[in-house]
Amino acid sequence: MKGLELKKVWAAILGAVVLSVGIFFGYEYVTEPKIVNGVVSKDMDEEGNPVGVTTVLSPEDTVYFSGKKNRFWIEEAEVVWYKGDIKTENRMVVEKEVASNKAGYFSSELSVPEELEEGRYGVTIYVEGKKIIETKAEFDIKNK
Image (cartoon, rainbow, N blue to C red):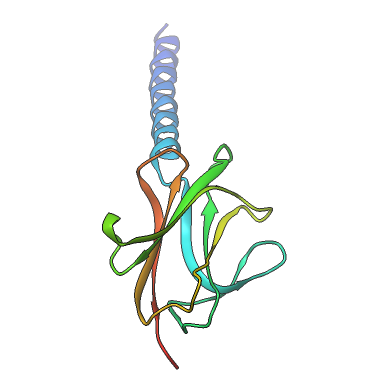
């Protein structure tokens, strides 16, 4: 009987360990960022991947932001562009209902009527309808 009791104890310990690991990874999966690797680039390829990732651009460059989708259920995001520090009062453009592309990126192009002024800029991305920044990128506009 002693061997059977020992097996039950080991089975209970193993079950507790498996359950704990499952809960830990489940919690991490739900609470970790759902959009990651936010980058600014000068271009995008035909599949939607960022090309020419940089943090310094010139006023005549087209500025693209890309954030990689990290959860399959995320369908839309909101991208917010800032002139200066990333603060509510510095918002320039808010783009809602940005869908992910075939490569799994949420992408946005900063479009303004005229060239960008020299200075510091930033961009953030949120899961549509949420108020938590998932990822961000900051960049500078400088004359050559």
